[in-house]
Image (cartoon, rainbow, N blue to C red; front, side, top):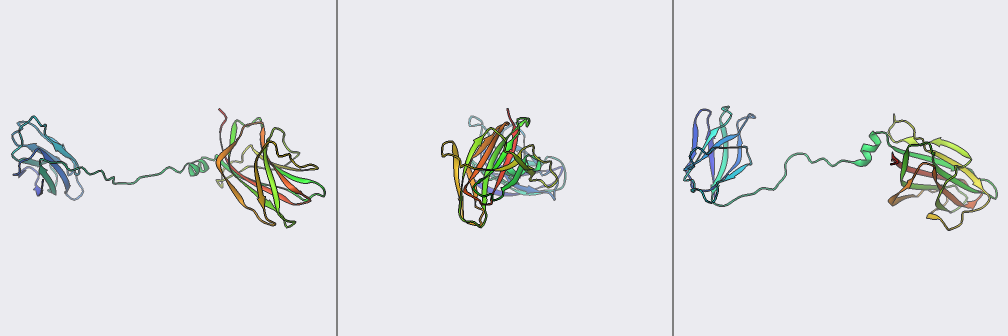
Length: 256
């Protein structure tokens, strides 16, 4: 294999006097115009191939070995200055040039107005446990795909919480889900709350979360929790007479 410099003027040919079955147009430029080459292998009557920089051609094994190669300025533009490789071997270049774009699904959902977040809080009530719920009304055509749950506890001390599904909306509505896009529409899903005289049993709990006094640790789920229309995601505080808050992050998709 041997590399050769070429200078291909419009309207004339440039002969590479080297034998070989293989030619690669390694590089070539004419100042930004069409730098394609019309390539003719010697002893291959009437055979012409157009190559762009980086492309290669090899004649069939049952054909005569070309004794030379002739290149022409295919577009007839400005003079092309470049390099070719000729021989009987082969050179492959698997490198990728250009821009590779990774699609950020979360960003796309936010821009489309389908990602939401909301915070709900139950105030301290004597002898009662605070509860916060992400409620998906039966009238919503979308299911909620919950990706993050964060609890907040006040200064009264450490707090634990249990996360459960339920099928009844809590008594008080605080606010609708807020779009993660500043000018996006609110969600049909709601942050609801109440206080309850009893604490949730262990059975039916998806998760158990905990927080130190006046802290707000987040919990990133390994897989999302899906809340269909007509269901809620309910978080119970374990301590009585304690301010208890909870944040949810989710995106919505058609419930089909």
